[in-house]
Structure formats: C-alpha cells, structure tokens
Length: 197
Image (cartoon, rainbow, N blue to C red; front, side):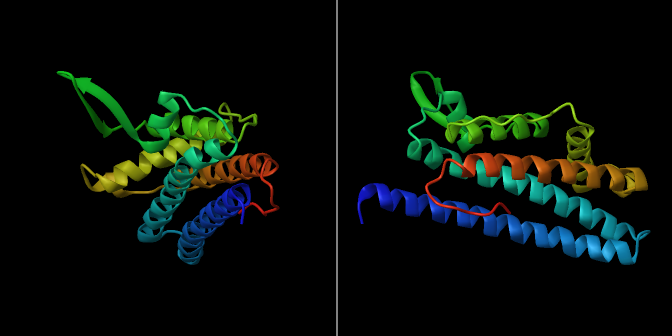
C-alpha cells in the first residue's frame, strides 16, 4: 500500500471513529429523551437530558479538534500556532527562558466557533455558519445550565424548567444541522464516500 493510500485509509478510520463516537453520545441523548417524554415533570430525567445533550456537544467538539491536525496534514493546510492551541487545548508559554505547555480551554461559545473554524480550515474549505441564530444562543444557554447543574450553589440550581427544555431542543437542532452541513462540505474533499452522522 503506497503512502497516499495509507493516509486515505487512516483518514477514513478517523472519520469512522468520529461517527461511531457521536452515535454513542447521541444514543445517550435519545435514551434520556425517551424517559423524559414518559415522565415530563420528572426532574431527574430533565437533568439527565441536559447533561447528555451537553456531553454530546462537548464530546463532538473534542472529536473534531482531535481530527483537525491530521486533516490539515492530509490536505496540506498549514495551521497557525493559535489553531494548534485550539485543536490540542494546550498552549506553549515561556517563563524564565523555559518553554512549558499548559491547558487552554475556551469558554463554550468561543469553543464552538473556533472548533468549527479550524476543522473547516483543516479541510481547505468554507462553510457559512449562522451564529446569530437563536439555536446557537439556546445551545450556549443549555451549556450554562449544565454547568449550574454540575456545580449547584443551592436547591433551585438543580431545577430544569420547561423553558430550558425547549431551549435545549432548539440548541441541539442547531448543532445537528450545523454539524451535518460542516461534515457534508468537508466530506466532499475526502477521497472516499461517507455518510454524515
């Protein structure tokens, strides 16, 4: 097998891993949603649904970042130092003449924008993404709610009301639509055919 074909096979495996992992996270969301629909007032299932939706969003971003350096190499795209910091969630800094790395995590809204930006860039293509859409704002508010659920300060911080559930559904629809658009456009550049998750 020549090097170019081997690299294409490796890219296909990365895409397969991405798709399979997203499917696992999505099945968690579906399971939580099914239970919530059976007991719509049950706060446990409401909280579980928000946590699963957030895990799907955050997990997807992590997976896209993981693939970005390999995609850039495959398509011969040069990533900037900032792009690499975003993809690896690590930053280089020098103190007293010693270069070290440390974690670099972006706030959720910026993480979404920057991850999509570098993933698309690594594939040498462009995708129009509407961050002014209410769905994007709803996705961000869902993630804020998830943070409150994970780090409550009092008993009312663990409540998930109807408005939050509605926002979560809109946010996930935006994420699903946007992700499908990105993967479809980036997939056109790959030397093999695949279906988006």
